[in-house]
Length: 268
Length: 272
Image 1 (cartoon, rainbow over the protein chains, first blue to last red):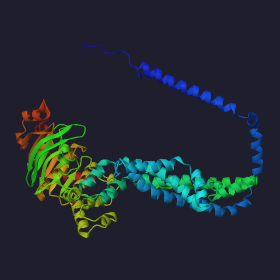
Image 2: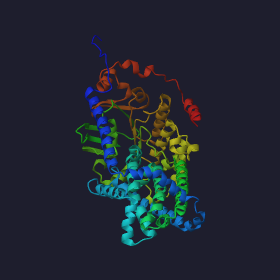
Image 3: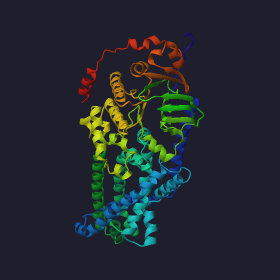
Image 4: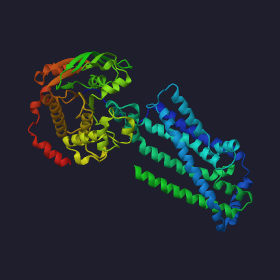
């Protein structure tokens, strides 16, 4: 033990420190630059005017026209149906896609897995509203377009989270089931499904919760539900009706969030 | 019963895990496989039921060469080989009973296993085995609600549910405390003796291997360097297997061997 021990210790090497410092500096510079571009195109007169405008619209919203509420029940029911049926449809398609996309369950990594990943990315990269816009053009306005839009957007979300859950399963449990002489379908139902079931329910309910929000605005492009009424009320500047719709959406979302929290609590 | 001839395994990374292993195990024989980590113990037993594909060599179980089988024939033969794992490898979210019954998966059609509609005879045997390993009252608990020793008992019952001709046991006690380890080893040896079942047991605890196994095989870097009864395992043999070390401090003589069979019952009560 005659060797001399180092006296100093630093968390990062000097070069690392310099890079880190430069990185932060670049980030701040970028922020300043973006701020300048943003302010260039802003018409400041409108911004200074904003509090007055907000107060004005707020004033027109008061008092809310509660008598409008009964007329909203049918569109609300439509919205719930769009969200629920869309979620169910999306989940049903997402399950096989997830198994094809997961590295440990896909039958072919070179062919089927890229296809499954492509389906997931496509579905995820297009917003429900855009899906609805396309579908309204293709199959005409109405509930069906909304349901399909929600389903198409859900495939990617559920598929991605589910395939990650499949890849995170404990390989030893699967190995043990394989070692009993079980067939591939049995390995799936005994080794993998019990492991991903909690994730599956929690992902599905979470997506349903998101879909309720999204389906409330799909009507803006003609896909049925509350959005349709919103569009109509906005068009005639009936702010006292708009506020009733907004409050109804808020109440529905709070309720769906409560339901999804209960479901998740029950399965974990 | 089990004949392994010139078995070799080289992984894709180029690591040679086994080179030219030849081994014969007779009916009812308990063989402890000892050796340092990375010696190829785990690979050797996984090459037998082909959870790991051997690179070359033959594995004869009775008159079947397991190394040559196609997919479906391999599944068929795997039913004859029960396997017990280091960290139990139970399906944690299924009940104890479902885990035990999963030992029958190779025998029942998919729809029966999916609907959990096992044959009455299977259910009777599952209860019998749970009773044998002392877990009858835990049948409907979820596997992750049990203690380590209890889980390993479920693992044993699952393997026996296959009505195997051979048991492969991978470090059965590595995650257990010394006392539970002994209880599990005792249970294993008793069960093998009752059924005349041969077993290959990977074990890194040499004193434990010496007190429970009737034959020890030492692996070093994928080759068999010792094969004989525990009494032949001299210091020289240990050095041959593991490399130089002061072996006297870990000989079984130093170990407390006072616990009698009564302890098992007492411990079972405590665990219940």
